[in-house]
Image (cartoon, rainbow, N blue to C red; front, side, top):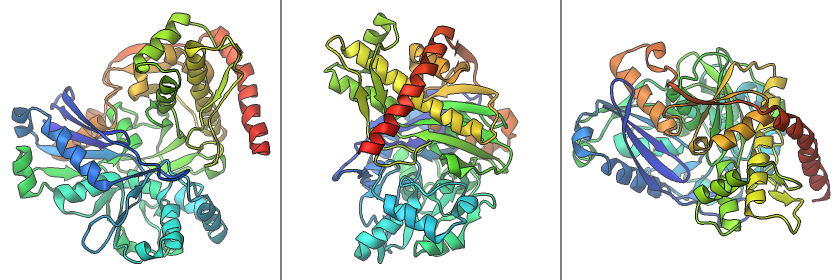
Length: 481
């Protein structure tokens, strides 16, 4: 067995995978996000550890005995600040926190070469500007910082006692020279840090340590090795075989991602496209990211007083028609690609007396699809070529939404067996590669196809017209507010 653990935003997921790549058991433990001020998004690292223990403990004990290696994945960019005693100095600042816009602008002014070194614009979601915010606004905390870790790497520390990270997750800190797959001393210095504050870097399929003896006993395992793993998107790509140039996936999680595997480093920060290391050696990837995707459906469920997302989807599918006049901007936590605007706001526009839960829900699904189209255009504008798109994440359960997305993007979407399992599955595969020495091609195969969502020609034409209104609404509201 191989254990994959994903430290997500809304929960920790633990999966057991056998040597043939079959997922044999899944357990989850929930997490909550704290928003103490406007634009802020935080979590207590202790909650990640408690949820990890809960999820692992819920897995079958006999199957846990058979685990040979563990892989980690997790939400990217979170700033976990540790003091000399390796305890958290403050709550972790998360990927969807927007407080550091001023620090981003200052970093880009101070380092004109930042985009070429790191492959990315300075955005509030990244880790480096968060530390600059702490440096300026909480100097007493900054002065105590001994180590900065990403969320999954804090959990690794608690598991193994080792300070380590992987290339893909660390590429999202804005401290890496992504082309060289190493920390950038220049960028670190610009935020008052140096290499001593950073964990050691590993490729995703390399071992980083062993389970501590007391934890191995508590979890019912041997002192098995723990691999570096990957950021959630890179690990998700490993899980569904998106590892070759031209392979792509669309992730419908809390946030939304269009992920494209590359064989080399090809930065294009101007359009808000991210260029990161992949979780596998010698490979990179590009991403367009929208900060709110499936989370918008959860918001609509609450707004309309429905029981859950299943009830919302049922009402939308029973109506089975495009929105009439309603348009939804899904910028509930600001936006990255293509706007790089932490102050962008969600908008539900065009309501009439005839608007109801189903029409609002339809507009929400379409608005997220339109935001993905903006992301697709940003990728193709950079010269990227997409061969195929696999759908992963919790939102992948709705084939109806798949048709909307395919029609907005103008290309088919492929649904694969296990696509909803996500990054924890890829983390387990990275553990298997490290344990067995098997080739990437042998382990990172695409799971069987269950369904293909084809574009609807009528919807494609309609959505092409509505994209103009969608983009105009954002532009005009931004000019007013």
